[in-house]
Image 1: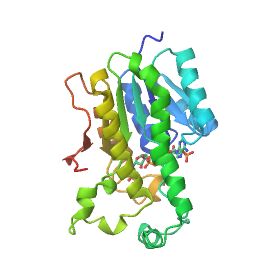
Image 2 (image 1 turned 90 degrees about the horizontal axis):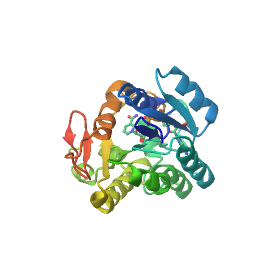
Image 3 (image 1 turned 120 degrees about the vertical axis):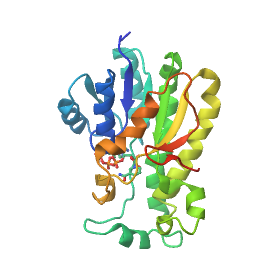
Length: 252
Ligand code: NAP
C-alpha cells in the first residue's frame, strides 16, 4: 500500500480543482488529478511540484469511473480524501454572452430540460456515482474525508431572502444542481457519520475561472482555501456542514 495520504480531485486539470490539487500536494498528499481528458490532466499534473498523477475520470461515464477506482486500488491501494470538484455551469452560454444575458434564457419557464439534465448529470449524478465508486476505498482509510464543491447560489435560505443579491440568477440549471448536491452531501454525511467519514460541502466564492467566463473576482488561491481546510479536518472536526472561507457557515 502507498505510504502517503492519497487524494483524488475531480476536474482538476484547470481552475479551482487544479489549485486544490496543488495545495494538497503541498500538504504532503499524493494527488490524483482527475481529468476527463487524460492529456489535459497530464499537462496539469506536470505543472504541480510534487507527487501529482493524472487520472482519466469523466464523472458522467460509468466505465471511466469504474476504471479510475480500479486503478487507484491497484496502483496505490488507498484513498483518503475525495474532492468532488468537477462541474459545468450550462450548455448554452455562447462566448461573449454575459452572466446576466444567460440568466434571462435559463429561467424555470424557458430552460430546455436537456440543459437541466446535462448539468445535473455532471454536478449531481456525477458526484453520487463517483462517491459510490470510491467508497469501498474510503471506508478502508483511517479517517477519510469527502468534500463536495458546491456554491452559495444553491442555498434555498439565501435565495428565499429578497435582499440576496444573486437571487435573480436562481434557476433549475446550475444553482438548483448545487441545491441538490447539498442534499446529497447531507445524506452521505448522515450515512457515513458512524464510519468516521466526514462529508462536507464548501462554497469557493465567485472565483475567476472558465466556469463563469472569468467574470469571478476571487483568485484561484482564495477559491481553493475552504475545500482544502475541510479536507484536512481532524477527528474532532464537523461533518454535514456547508461553509465558505470568509463567510463561515452558509445556510442550506
Ligand atoms: P472550471 O475552471 O470550469 O473547472 C471545472 C472542471 O470540471 C474542469 O476541469 C472541467 O474539465 C471539469 N469537468 C466538467 N465536466 C466534467 C466531467 N464530466 N468529468 C470530469 N470533469 C469534468 O470551473 P471552476 O470554477 O474551477 O469550478 C470548480 C468547482 O467550483 C465547481 O464545482 C463549481 O461549481 C464550483 N464553484 C465555482 C465558482 C466560481 O465562481 N468559479 C463559484 C462557486 C462554485 P474540462 O477542462 O475538461 O472542461
